Image 1 (tube, helix red, strand yellow):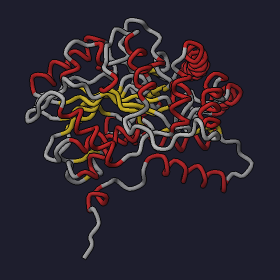
Image 2 (cartoon, one colour):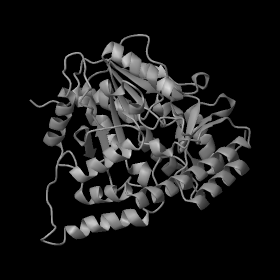
Image 3 (cartoon, one colour):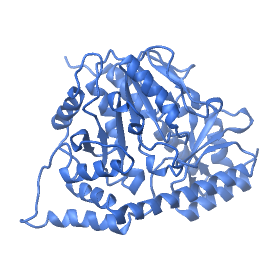
Length: 409
């Protein structure tokens, strides 16, 4: 008799973003004349740049000719794109072999799938608050106990709290763990780890034969040259870290779908030899995945061209100007706002001791603005609220004006 994977039943009810959608729909039904200002889910809004569109168009047109048509490609990613990514990292002083780079359909799938090459007995630590996919996919894999609704966490997991006191950058656990999930620039807090802070994790991981799974999907938003954009800028990281990245927020590929992961040949764990984890990820990808769209990969090549990079960085500057408008507007009300400087997310401390969901409802009903409750990202997110800088400029300004006019503090 067939049975389900019972680990799905452990997942806390109501995934964060669907619950937000449910509450917004109810508000609109009850207030049909109200204008909703969306500052919530981090989805890009501005058009792809001309160079990138030309690259995608070339990829599509190549499929319309018998002379240039291609079917399945290399599951690891087209060699030309992997080589371009290696050159992209080389500009940061990070030297990678293209065979260490695996092109995919985005950072989110990689963040969820990468844990499949590790045993289910591994103990996992999470930066808290964190993007939900890290925790949820490890629950589904069977690495957790039950969810504790009062504590807001799962037994069996180690949570590394991020708070105002530690500038929202965690410190390594006091106890041994096997897998460590970090995200910098962080979604949701907007905090960025320094070389010194990442070095603590690298030293911990090397000492404990742990693996850091490092999500760098927002690295291109870092404007401070003193801050690392890749964990491989830290000495020793190649022996203990996997990096995941994406074109989604970098170039507006949220719907195009293209990302990559890096599994160094030097990466080892307790029961492996150098190169084995790289081979395991290659086997996983060639078994479960037929490779990213060849059209998308042509677009990725266009992004990494000199002209493409310049255009995409202008797009990033646009979103960061949105972040400045939101940050200054909310700060003018006396609200405490973090982030929004080297990341497209702003992390707001809820006023008056309100819970994250209480503030969500207050903001929605008083101003029509929609954000993301911090508690949805983990127990340390309670009492905080995420706002996103992704949006059309006019919409951002209207949202900030509505908040300044209507929010009762």
